[in-house]
Length: 92
Image 1 (tube, rainbow, N blue to C red):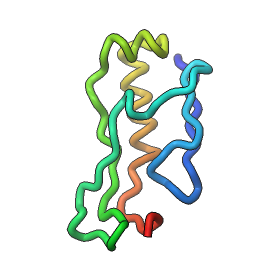
Image 2 (cartoon, rainbow, N blue to C red; image 1 turned 120 degrees about the horizontal axis):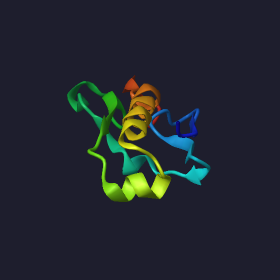
Image 3 (cartoon, rainbow, N blue to C red; image 1 turned 135 degrees about the horizontal axis):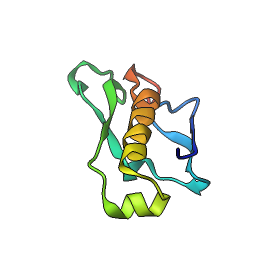
């Protein structure tokens, strides 16, 4: 199992302050991206429903972090658990 450390910014709950995999500084964009799924219900400069959307894995990412496809999927689930913020006004 890959060693994963995820810590979210206190005042920016849709972004990782610390994200490492097997001791390597990781980039959440290697696994997907966050999007506001309901911008019409958001306050100005806020999000209506901020969600992490996983990408399909690439061989380069699997090699970069020395992880398996199963571990990649587990990391994506962890990122969803941490980065699915919902409605948020922190950026206001």
